[in-house]
Image (tube, rainbow, N blue to C red; front, side, top):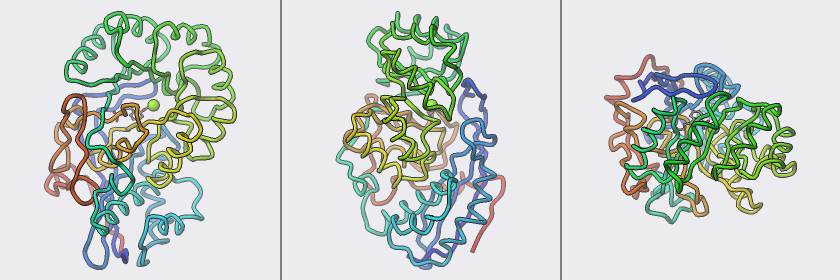
Length: 367
Ligand code: OSB
Ligand code: MG
């Protein structure tokens, strides 16, 4: 496939409900859609999952746009590329810029799966028809969260994650656990604590949480290892993990017993597959996270989450929990707490160009 054109659409989509975590509040999701087109007119879509500010990772949508235009696209422009592996090799000299790389790499997987005539999930090795999924609930008062947990449990979700931060933690968890003694429940601090909170964090062990996600700083492995030794609850790393090497460090030091894998944060699907394989071979629980992707990005999440051995329900709830209007033609719908894996050839979504236009702020074309 000869890559001839790359389009970047700056999107601003209002979230169905605003979302707060320990770092920020998001009301409108601003991101870039990327569209790769070949010399025969075939196309594949991806998205840049970075945020407007670097609260989650060092990358931002502007830094991604910049590196796509100046570093990544020039490496592949006009090239004849047959497989995702070749694409990654061409990106080989680029350090970091994982989210920028992932935007193009996923778009290429979209193209590639259509070219070989298979559903993407099957191409990656999935044998599942449906995937149990969970929800991630933003910070809120204990009362409102209890209500929201009741709602999502009634809808059929089998796992609930709540965001926590100092002052909004133990008591909320205690109340939810009291009302939902059997629920797969977990918490995510997005790095809001330090080791000086050890006594408080140890109290979470009383509530049979599935795991605690990213309790400490985004570049800390040492203190996480100290904390994991003192906790029964599994620590899951999110922000720390940008590569397989980060996972190996976490494993060697004992910083975590679970890994939240996101293709955007680790540089694409191929890199995510390597991480998943390593975790499965090394007794680390691995599951698929999310970051408010559109129907484009969430289709790639679902493909990863449907792989064998990804037994823990990911942060992939149905489209209407995220968006007033998603930009794909058949937004995912929940059935019995599960999402249906697409059987169609390609990445499992069809972009609705009218809706893309509706939420697009500006469009750029690189040839
Ligand atoms: O920490 O997992 C996170 C969303 C954006 C960025 C980081 C995170 C999240 C979520 C929500 O927790 C996941 C989702 O439902 O898409
Ligand atoms: Mg997280």
